[in-house]
Length: 356
Image (cartoon, rainbow, N blue to C red; front, side, top):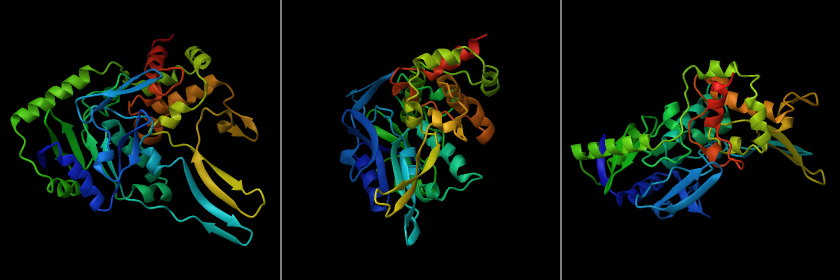
């Protein structure tokens, strides 16, 4: 089902989702950054701004398009696999599991890379291992994806097949045209919502404009990764000097893993009150850049920064394929933008492939 709707109908779309009981998560402009946050109305959604992103650089500027931006540092992972999740509360006379949280999220204004990240996280948490905490937040999710017509300079989604235009996996897929939106519903839930929006049947000029926007978006993407046989090629570079060269620049801060929409590692911690009257067991995000991450019997296996960066990059582009059947990178470019020293994963992959 397809429909071209006038721009003011976007407000109606958000209202419909709220009326249906969804907790709407959308991009908002907050302290100069685009962030995904829960909103109570369309007036809170970021509009008429774009982003300037590059190595360790992020700025927001005014734009003519309503949704001429890509994304900021956070992702849907922050809502479905939160940074901290309480598991168990313990007192001297009582041990009580924390109830599994259940929410019906509607994710509005997400891009193809983030749609792909949902598919990957589903494999991680709902594949062979069923994680009840993720499942409680993921069940009943509704997605409104926007085709990306102005990718950031750090984006390379075309290389890994996740964008810039969305090919599926979302209830509604929207392309912003000059004066309207072309909306496609790909699920029954999406059709029910789209039917309530005012609009008209698409015409050939709408499809032509959309095609031009897609071609412009593809040509604007300056970063690329050659993924042909990439997992096996990278395994041949385990002893490359490139790893040590990266380590001399890398701060091992873990920022790249924190902003990555697919990194899923966590640790379980027991936090005891000072007076010993109780404790809480919780899980929180962890990153493979910590030396303690690989500790076994008090001895870290990956002691050097080079070995830890190698673990992270190879997990994204090699090991992940063996685990889950696809790359662990969706080409969103967040790790490039939010690296404080501007390490570019696409350049490091190129250097590795050409080394030796």
